[in-house]
Amino acid sequence: MGFLEPTKICKPGVFLLTKAVISDKDMGNLVEPERIVPWMEKIAVYPGFFDPITNGHVDIILRGLRLFDKILVAVLKNPKKEALFSTKDRVAMIQEIFIRQPDIEVKAFDGLLVEFVRRHKAKIVIRGLRAVSDFEYELQMALMNRQLDPEIETLYMMPSVHYSFLNSGVVKEVFSLGGSVTGLVPEIVEKKLREKLKQGRLSVGK
Ligand code: PNS
Image (tube, rainbow, N blue to C red; front, side, top):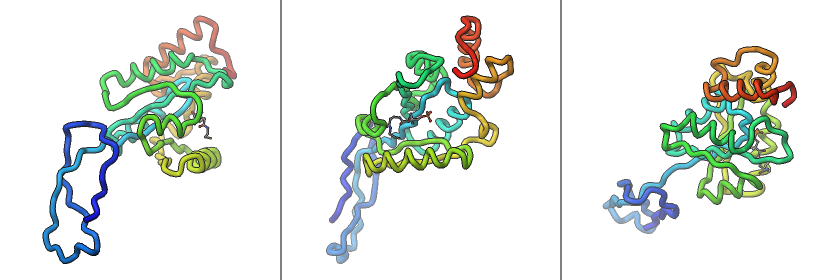
């Protein structure tokens, strides 16, 4: 009898009743036994720079939760890329947005994404795909990650059409020029942008 043994047990004490897989040589066996196997938590990693998080990102995280038990938001610490918000602030804003959702975790990472994914015993990376213009970059990233670790799969989801034009850069630019970003970013992000503007830290290009 060939059982597919679960190797990663993320939530001890929770079990599933499954049918056993019967191999060819057992075909004579008319009984299809049921067995209890530990429940495996389905985790997906959602990586990004999130400078700052927008409602387009939030949309993808919530869509991800329809497919996975837990979304681990991975915030890139990247000293090479100039950021308006520090890594600590980017992580804190996302944590505050999802404070009542234990199935959404937020962590900063540096180095290779695939290493972060492996370290957290995940196999799936989710990314949003807004338009054809995203495709080339995303294809390159997904294939490079696959080259680095063929066990890790990248899954793309389309955000709501309301956010298909949105990215962190355009939010910062519009806000710095006095435009409204209400409805495009979570309230906490708008508040933090206002603070940056007051401090004179928000200018076009940042
Ligand atoms: O929000 P972004 O800028 O589109 O996110 C890009 C991100 C963080 C997903 C990507 O730059 C990344 O995974 N960086 C980590 C370094 C890495 O693993 N590079 C190899 C894949 S191209």
